Structure formats: C-alpha cells, structure tokens
Length: 110
Image (cartoon, one colour):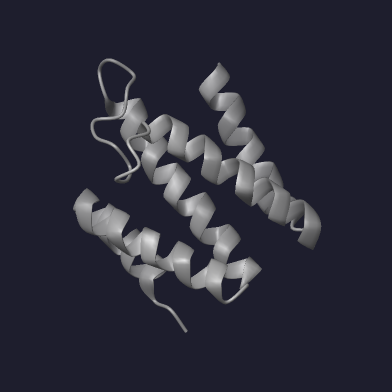
C-alpha cells in the first residue's frame, strides 16, 4: 500500500508544497500502475485541490510554480486531474466525490 497520498496531504498542511507535489506524483504513479482506481481518484482530487488552493492564493490568479516538470500551470494541471477523477468516479459510481469535484469547479467559475 502506498502512503504517498497521505504524506502529500500532510505536507500540504505543514506548507511544504515541493514535498507535497512529490508525494502526490508518486501516489498517482502507484495508482495508475497498479490500476488502483479508488486510490487514484482520491489522489487526483486531493492533488487538484492543493493546486487550486495555491492558484486561489496567488495575487495574479496564476499558479506560483509549475505543478510538475511538464511546464503546465497549476490551474491546467488541476483541471486535468479533475477530469481524470471525474471519469473514474462516474465509472465507479462515486457520486459524492463527483459532486465534490463539480462543486469546486463551480466555485472557480463564480
């Protein structure tokens, strides 16, 4: 079992964004490689929330740093993670998490 998602959440709380990203990326890889969809979907959701919270806190509305080495903004990475999570939650019938993700998107639009 991977504890990287939990460690990512812990590092979000203590304010170490770099370590949080590293652990979330490891948890994504673990979930995808092992086809552990429930673990993957929660990681996608938590990681996206962290990135969007960072995006919200930035005065310009842009992410402070890139979420990964891919060069995309935090906001773009978060939307991609949310999209992946929504597909999985609908496949697995995880309606409460689907609604949580969609509610967060409504907040961003408002």
